[in-house]
Image (cartoon, rainbow, N blue to C red):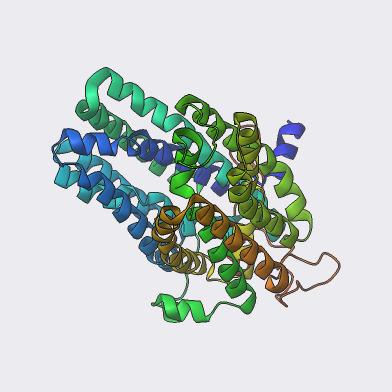
Length: 449
């Protein structure tokens, strides 16, 4: 029993964190079961060949645009109530697609559920910042990133089974029906496990993303600039990685592996990311975060360069290990965003950050296509150059807002909050729930930050 409590303390498992992780698992499973197969579903319903591509473009744009309203609503209503709204949106989208087998309805419904991850991310990050002390933020974000991978891996398998057995139309409708049940279960669990928190004062909350951007500290703006450069590095060659590995390119001696071998490479990438999550979170929570983010940015930069020189399957395995290591400090980067964000505006700042980042980075896919048409080397080496520029920018201008354990203030001058504990700060015990806290503690304003 003591050992279970100690593990819960190390992992930062509070009631609200457990509720959030269950929600991510259940709603994410419903989202992922049919997402990969929507192109098949659209074509089976008579949409033609263009709409699957349009759906992907719409999803990317909407995901970026949803980030700010997701953060704004999380501040206005509080994380718990905003997550209820987002989950009800997903359920409505699932229900539309399951009930009405028409491709126009699929497009409409997808606007409600395909961007669930994007619109709910600011609220979940805000919940982590409220539920855990700063010395546990990286661990909380890491658990979120880790749990998200289970639906990503298992959802398409279940959806594929439904389609193989019942066909693309009935199989997808069954998958969405089950997704509704998962999302309803998540709603019940979050009502039980996640306590209410005081929403931000509406008069103090910027209603425009540009106004919110002005509240960013120079440190957060510099992180945003370096992150945009790094995402250009990632997205420029993104669509062409599989072509380089599987089909080969005229004028180049490439590995030309099978689709099955490419699947193994993807699994190797995911396994590499999962293995480094928890150890890195432990170290990052104990001290400075900048080195972990910098190493992550270097790994982003190295992947296109290493991939370009791979000529065999064995060397491709090394390249995809490097690709997996780009997740080395990704949870640390998200935690750093929260640390650098204005106090009492964590979710709104997170949504604003992702809005500007993703809108700018959406241009990179088009640029990547033109670069590939010029020559694959232009594509990969330009991506590498963007990655190096992003890493150098962060190395020079990046700042770390970790707590200075020897000083009553952190490096940004924010008062020490090491004693901060949220209303559900007691770790989860072996029964899976934290013991109830004193009602006076729930009402203490110092515990709502």
